[in-house]
Image 1: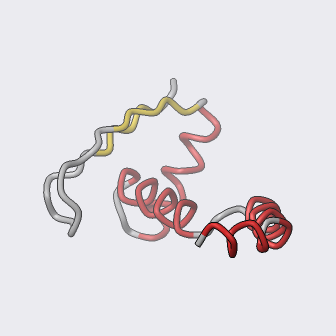
Image 2: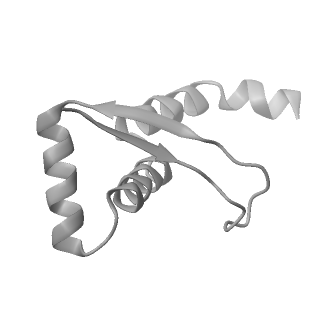
Length: 82
């Protein structure tokens, strides 16, 4: 049986609005999430929220490298447009 998580922002954070996200995990991932949450002493929903927060806070290295290359390549154009 798969685990279904529902993440809900209830105004506890500094940003306004909110997003409700439901994900369905395969049984093996659901068991892994539950086991890790139990080990850490937190609800599975909070662990999933923390993992997503960490993922979004650290942009992908490949994206950062590509963005840097584009900015360097177009530096002169950006300077002239400024």
